Image (tube, rainbow, N blue to C red):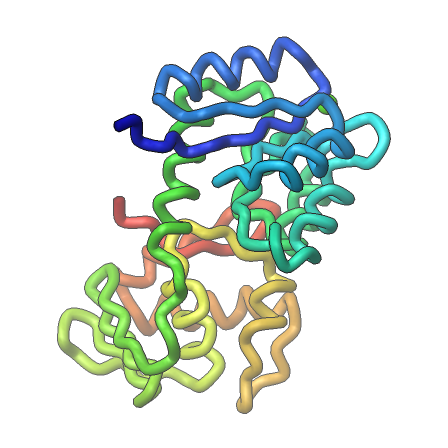
Length: 233
Ligand code: CA
């Protein structure tokens, strides 16, 4: 019996890019669907829900951000991971896309190998979700994070964190590899001891890294975007 393939939908108006992506994904045994416009993409999703969508941002008609917004607003499609395909210089669009709920992005021109690796990483993370609930202890990168007790140890030694630092660390660490914008972090981390603003996120990260010592390297700066917790794989 044939095993159902993982289905990837490519939404891209440039035919040569669609072909390049299709070729490389099919070689990795993915099933591939194509749409040459955002509207066609939405139609394709409604007909057959893919496991992941590769979404070009510059599309005729509705652009990629609009499509992403519609997908993430809709209860039946909001859980489909979206990887944006962007051109250089679309940094602000990338930020908007991430804030709308896109999982990742890749900048054109990209190497097909990198693209395939990104797709696999996103699918792997998606499989690892649901995000552990607040009582689950997280063990990652020498850290043990205990949300219920609001306690953290590094290599077995307790570290004294403020509520905001703890919230920030927990938020990033429960989704290793995911890039979050400063705005998303502010939104997620409501400090009791600190009025968190986008700029204060940087200050908090500096303080947090210092307290975590070597383990602080796990909090990576993503230039122009924000922060992510290192994916150990
Ligand atoms: Ca395009």
